[in-house]
Length: 224
Image (cartoon, rainbow, N blue to C red; front, side, top):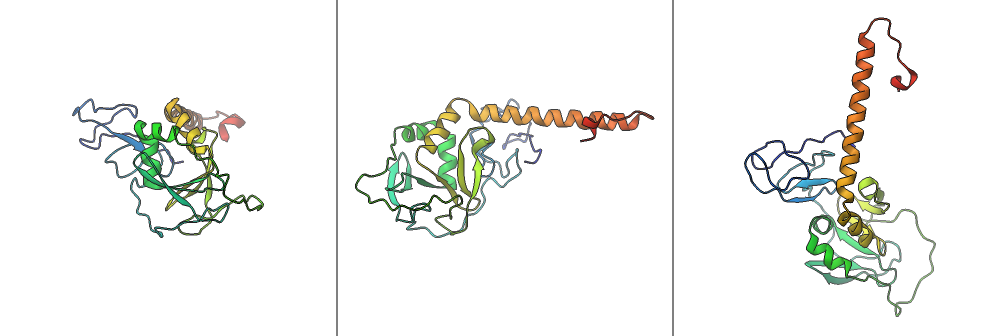
């Protein structure tokens, strides 16, 4: 992940703390959401993520449906949860979330509450087809194999992710992600990332200092 950690007010451009809800300079409200690439916190109105540099609103292209489950290869059913229309597999209980829906769910507490009460259990009436579980599965929209992505790096949830279209979540993974967010997981992950960046910068300064001192030998650990 790139070392992009500056967080600026989208209204006046002043530097603000990533956890702030208002700008201390212009007092405008700073609404938060989640980066579609690294799942870090970003402010509404930002064009690029301050953590990884990705476009905050990258255009997506793909078919609009109907979709098939990338694991079971049967048609997905549409269900309404909160303000979202989701594609749900009645056989395995998996969910297909487009990029915008996933961002909103991760950013809005009222949407999270609706999904915590949603039970995407497999239907008992749906006949099961016994297939070996595939490690990499295709995106329901474009058909390309999706990447594995560890949500926020430390949540313990590995999702199937298409850069252009969205994420496939196996049964109960969305609820685990929401629990992680509501327990302060995104904030803790951001703090861990910032601490790691400071440590790397400190090591870099030490190496530069040691190289500038004539006759000073570098320790093997400093040369890494």
